[in-house]
Length: 72
Image 1: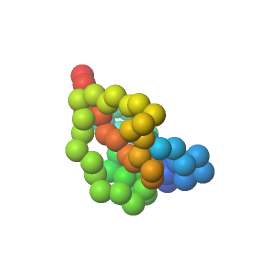
Image 2: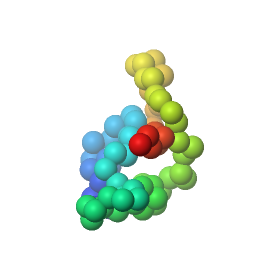
Image 3: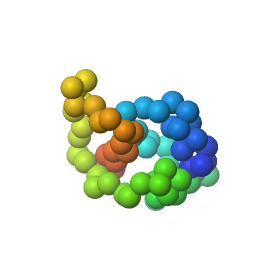
Image 4: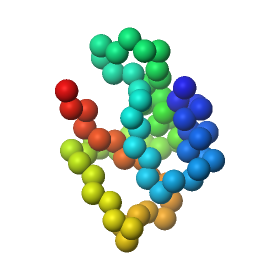
């Protein structure tokens, strides 16, 4: 669930979180939506990115949620 995922993020305290397994159109698995996860994380929805390149010098101080553009 989104609540459990947010709880795990709180325990691990990663620098970057990229939601991967959430409900999208056509999916039959019973998953919460990404908006529900963002609400549980208490963050505003970030603009989706086409790609993400990360270096150790660019890591944020606080946990940051990054959404990648859904490619089909």
